Image 1 (cartoon, rainbow, N blue to C red):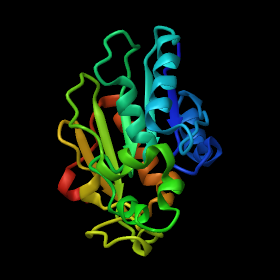
Image 2 (cartoon, rainbow, N blue to C red):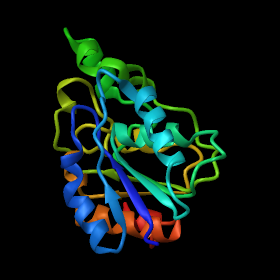
Image 3 (tube, one colour):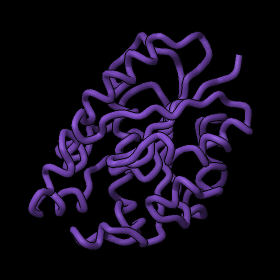
Length: 212
């Protein structure tokens, strides 16, 4: 039975944005789904609960989670402290696990809280350190092209929206950076190759310092 991957989009996005990565994973032998979720009106908690129930209905083969931006937070919160879910690994792409300066800046703009919706607190504050048994890998971008500049100072290196330091959560298994912007992580061949390597082995290949 083929291992399965659930791809999770970021805020204001749809599952279709993950199709390029989905095609790469499918070509590597995985079955893949790219569900939509209400990132603004529903928020992180509702999306995590829905994903948790999806994992409870999965078969015996591993089900891996790959989340871009907010999707990475959804993936981690869905399986946090859960012992009755199918096995699998998690990869976060440009996810502000420690909280986003850009989100905090946007929240102070007129209408900013409306734009962030129910995901506002998670994006501004981040999530708790990871202590779960699942191996978590994080891939961050360091090509500074994006709209984050409009809302806050981003500590370099960053991907135009999320700073690399904002993606470093205590307890993760491994971390790498690639030359890609925040949105570009979805199209990056390097990010896709690293994702595949982590899903297979629970580690990224090579030396972390060299990868940066």
